[in-house]
Amino acid sequence: MPRGMDMSKLDDGTREMRDLEVVAANGLLHRRALLIRGLAFAGAAVGLDLASRRATAEPLVDAQWSLANGDPPPPYQLPSKFAANIVRTNANPDNLPKVTQTRTPLHLLDGQITPNGLHFAIIHAGVPAIDPAAHKLLIHGLVKRPLLFTFDDLLRYPRVSRITFIECGGNSAPLFSPTPMQATIQALHGLVSCAEWTGIPLSILLDEVGVDPRAKWFVAEGADAPHLNRSVPLAKAFDDALIAIYQNGEPLMPGNGFPMRLVVPGYEGNMNIKFLRRIELTEEPAMSYYESQVYTTPLPNGNVYRFFFVSEVKSFITWPSYGFSLKGPGLYEISGLAYSGEGRISRVMVSADGGKTWGQAALQEPVLSKAFTRFRMPWKWNGGPAVLQSRAYDQFGSAQPTRAQFVAARGEYASTPVITAFQNHHFNAVMSWAVTASGEVTHVYA
Amino acid sequence: MSTRNRISAVVVLCVFSTLDNAAEPGATSGHPTGPNLGHPISAADLAPWDITVFPSGRGLPAGSGTAAKGAPVFATYCAACHGDKGQGGLGPVVVSDRKREGIDEGTTTIANFWPYATTLFDYIRRAMPWQSPRTMTDDQAYALTAFILASNKLIDPDFVIDAKSLPTVRMPNRDGFLDRFPKLVPSDPPR
Image: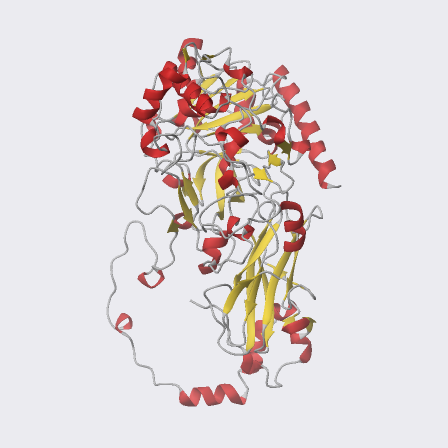
């Protein structure tokens, strides 16, 4: 489903040169070219080329769908059968008793929001079928009065909505490979998604239980079979933590935590406890399996990072990317995603020559803190080899590291891994797509 | 403001907010007040929920176990996934003397990586056996903990694991961890 537009025929002298001002080597154009695209199309309409295309067009023959009534609309609609290939992958198709990863097809989506059916999920022991009428939330520990809330009770609480991404700490782990793995964005970076989460600010409930001043952490726990639990700094509860009940306007999807989950914007996915049933306020972290072993980050010097928490500033190009090909020289739109667990994306720079020269991409509004930010960059491909990169910066000045910087600090594997494995975590370096003269796209390290 | 300063500012604000809330719930926070619908819960009703075990040993229940008692429990409940000697299978390796290599977590083991022995008991009791968690007794969980620690040569074969002894088991890699963002970490677990 290539979505690049061949606008090469615009280059016929009918538009003004300033529209396609080159800002970096290998054909990257000023982002203003995106704003005046309508104008450019209008200019092209009077060109000779379009007239010649019209002469070769087939006469209109109405298709069947224009000549008869279609199907009745279902109560809950699903995508067109022509978009039925846009699905998550499942790393455990035989449903063996082990963790299951479903990855989002980011290369086949656009905009900022991940549709609910395509939101990534790590499922630890199957998807629990929780009856909300029997689901309760306990808040206890270092509090004045432990309280038990029914799901019905919680529906009466004030709510807020927050568009935020959630990223698995193991997302992009294949990029630790010493050689670039040839795989789609879905396989490489598909464990991140962005949704509008609506729910109760955790701070409201903590006010009601009365926080003991000795409390420094809260330990959140799910009602799934592994009773998955993580320790979260209490400050996060009074910053922006939510107990989410709605996902993109409808109740949470079962694999994303129905009937309710913790959302800690910008913090690694595993801390956003799904099927939330208990919060214990404590002085000390629990050092649960998932925080003391799984989501840690071994370093080349032998030490190990723990309490990584934050998804650091990151970006990648979703089009063009592995699996797509370019159909001849001409004008294309490079598109991708940028996000930072610390705040807003301030800018994204794009290179078409492997990082030697850079041009600034257009950021699609709204640009929100700790949310996906779609960037776009007009590119006039001359048909020669190119190496595409994106590099994101956030509002606090944090820059996405280059691969060389990242590997110097964090290392890489000794050998090529199984692509679905997490043998390290929290990868956020710049990645590169090479475009060959034939228009094929491959993953390279540059 | 730098990221670092911003984070400390957030932490400071939150500490004040916490103190205020403790004094008078809901009085000072910059968010709406809730309808106060929570139900009080007695200590007895709360106890079955309260399953987390901390590195200090807080949360460990009564009971005890040894490696000898754990061996048949392991054979019954664990070997199908973790291998008859804990060498791994569908589930992770739980007994190994291999060394950690490079940055590859595929080479990490309980013996060469896990910082706290309490995590082993906690995870066994909350999540194992994988297909029927919370079905073993506390004594069985203690015995399994002892069996796995002894098989990894982290305790003597006849060492009795209970609420008092488990927190004293010092794991080899306990000091191998660094906080990624120290400013975000309000208190460290015990060294």
